[in-house]
Amino acid sequence: MNTPKPAGSGLWQDALRRFAKNKLSVTAALIIIIIAFMAIFAPWVSPAHYSEANFDDAWQFPSLTHPMGTDSIGRDYFSRIIYGAQVSLLIGFAAMLISGVIGTALGVAAGYFGGRVDMVITFLITTRLAMPVILVALVVVALIGSSMWIVIWVLGLLIWDRFAVVMRSTTQQVRNMDYVAAAQAIGCSQTRIILTEIMPNIVNALIVVATLEVAHAVLLEAALSFLGLGVQPPTPSWGLMISEGKGMMFFKPWVIGIPGLALFAMILCINLLGDGIRDVTAPENRN
Image (cartoon, rainbow, N blue to C red; front, side):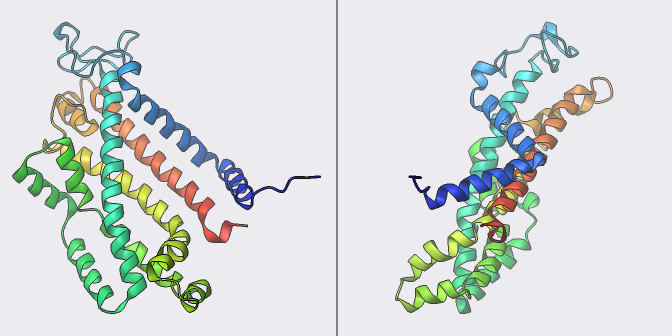
């Protein structure tokens, strides 16, 4: 006698099978996993501490001793790249979570309730869109100082607009579905309808926006650090490393090429992973 499988297990197996067919997304996921593993276990993976300097080894070309060379004061570049990934991932994901909570709450409220609630939230979104993120972030950080947590909160409070816009439009589409009307007809509370009927059916759009905002936050942090208003030395940041090495870009090209390629690879892989998850979680692709 065959034991019946839980209904959810078949869906997960089908989703994983379809995800595995997307070679780009699988490759991106593996690269992100490797970067995250190295970032989490940086003290054990890196050959030296990120601030350990040796002036005798300054500006060394990549070698067996220093796989990615050294910087102007002899710090191992490979170690600083690993610790820089730690900083980028922490800021990217933390800022995305803050902005995601704010934007999703506002967007779902506007899309579900409509009327005056929608008018007020739309006004807030329009006001936020009128402010250039990088300029506002520069002003705020310049006024209150810069540190990793200040950068996280500044970015988190500034990049919620995309969550709000997408969640508002998708909620407006879902709220008119028959299953929402059925839940309302049997007397379900609005909170229950939002949590059990609306949210599960907009999660794929939420995942796509979340991946975009992680990459967006990483880029903004790199820009702020490049301008000297983000993560402060000696804490490594890929944007700060590019800034520190720009004066030697024609003579020691690896000092900006390596962090630049690392930044490019991380952002590309995050977006490819998001595309793969979107294809798997899209309602039209579910069996």
